[in-house]
Length: 571
Image (cartoon, rainbow, N blue to C red; front, side):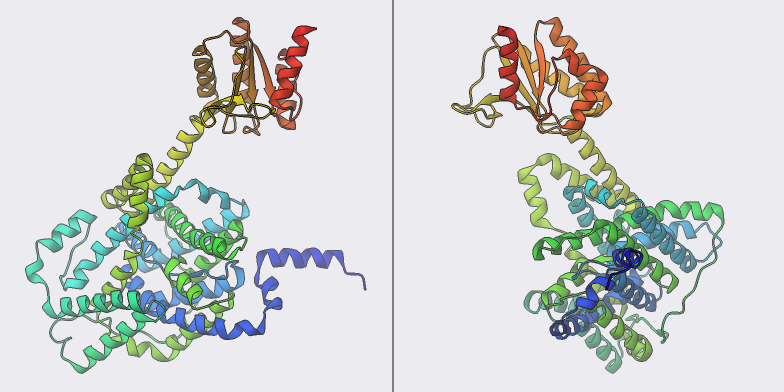
């Protein structure tokens, strides 16, 4: 029976927006057991981390569970990765607290209301980025910048938890200020609070080392609750979370703040969006390479946007991809996005029936959970490798790290992005170039600096740029070529510009090549082009450059160009 083309197009479009419509009908029932086990295990990690990151964001503990619940439901429908778990993260929580807190201090709206507005703005920005297919932009943020930023974020986050860990009241401001505040008040530390927190850290560290697949954080949380319940630690100054309201999140839309406040929140939301998406797509690509999957960067923008919109209307806060929870999901054998549904069901059960259990949870244990969780953000082997492999990349990483510690998380994000763009600009404006030589007995030309045995002709100079040619690197390339030509002992009669590694040439670069042709012509040297793409040939013909250099043929080899030139000279 013939199918309806319109229905097919609608079905394909819906499947592209809602991947669940594509993978769920093909779900293998044999995967269900693994997905259920993975979902329960991941939920055991989501619960204590959700409570801890809500505290980190200066929000009521239940908001962390709300955010986690709404995020996994959204990702179930819109996500493409079989491993990614979306929810609250430490870096997003602290960036949210420090940035929105600064705006709230001068605004009439409450902090909690501004958090929801900011979370919704993050979702809107992500959806707009998806609509314009801007997923490729994340690749402009270099790994070295992310390594330095992550390490700086981890140290910054740890500094915010020292007060809770030691039981010292107060302490705010930049990283160094917090350290000084706690360091000068160690005599005021509560011994019982510190003992419980340090014990929690020790158990978490030992659990991660010897039982990496075990819900260590949940076990530590439960043990601390039991300890407080059977002792008088609370009376001795050990602060606890207190009452957590039960029930599912009520869907709410916050009042829109005034234009001035909204304008102050936009750059905050932009930074949070960048961090949220970078966290998520980094996890997606990591596991895609491991399992041979093909991630869709643009669809992940939509998934990230919808997850944040859902978290916002559900009374939560900004969410992103979690490497630790995703790694746990993969380690215990999660097969599909259905893991998210199991996590959601567990969170629903906790919110409906078990919130009272967490009333006696010590805040110092939440600090311990955060501190141990963020240590994974400090990738010492990667920093050591950067130092040995590339001092410049290491300097970029350190600049991103210090940017977070000196100017805070918000501007630290922008420092990282700015450094990434500067690195890209520096690389494309000063591309790698080579003089080429022929491999004896063949018609292949290779870089002389890589293959010194290759031979050259005294009257011919062959040159290649390992990058696209455009206005930003055009003058650098012209100067480099002329300098190399000037260092040749013999008089060069022909310059062959091999465009094999330069598939595109913009108008600015074409103008540079016209100038180069004039420079060479004044010296009695011909200029020819090899390996040009069809579009480049068309550009040269339109500008008249092709005629001035004796014609340019699409994909003509270096050897062919030289033979044609010699034939013209001899005729």
